[in-house]
Length: 66
Image 1: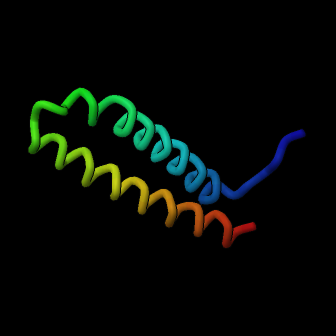
Image 2: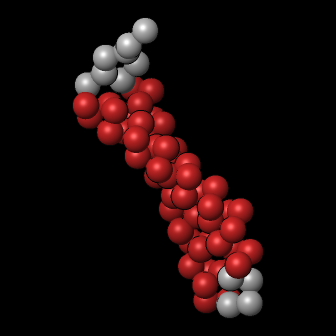
């Protein structure tokens, strides 16, 4: 079964997937790999929070289109 959706909804889903992948990589690998550098740790933690906030906003937008 093929589900047709507007391109802008598809774009939201696509960005959501990209964000979730980034969140996984940052949490699983990047923070661990940078544990010897406080500046990098701070950067990855900040970016992780930003990605999580963006993901929440994307979910809200997607839910409004159902």
